[in-house]
Length: 267
Image (cartoon, rainbow, N blue to C red; front, side):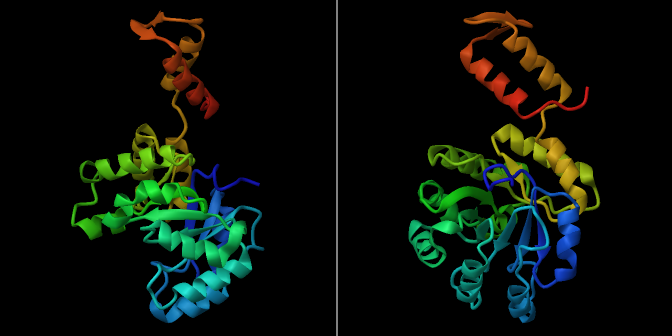
């Protein structure tokens, strides 16, 4: 089974809509996220928690709980501890102290994907990434934009995205998961956003609709031009070499190997 480290496209499904669980898994995401937070209205929180299950699919099941300090957090955490999903997604992951409390409830068997979505979370991202219970970071870009009062556009969020990539690397984590593409009527928007995230160093992206899954996955694959370049680089031998007018040495070959390791598209 795919692990939390390998996930490229996890798909959200509202926890109070159990009739959608199997359909979400059937859309072939890398993981299904049962959401107890934003997608669930307050009067359906208890029902969503009662619906938690992992038996509807062989794919990894993640659970996004409600944030610490909300009326539902403690009950959510207790339910996750009983369920033992592939991971818990923790909103408003803002400090190692918060993660200590989560670890005390979940124990060593349920890893954490820390959702960084506030200014405080970004300020402590390196400490969060270094916490032993955290296996990966995800970017809550929409909430982050609301928290700091910026537009949900690439230019405004570039510094935050770059910091999360750096924090993940310093913490020895897999590359982080980028936030959602809110537009669901245009699959090319999700694909374009995925290519942009990959260029910054992200390793995957959260999806909110089944039609985004394939475009996101395609966006994280190298294209034919990248594959051709990587093959030329690796065919250039050892030491410094000239490939298409550019100097190539070992750091460039490392990148070329990484491109080929992600797999080639159909040529």
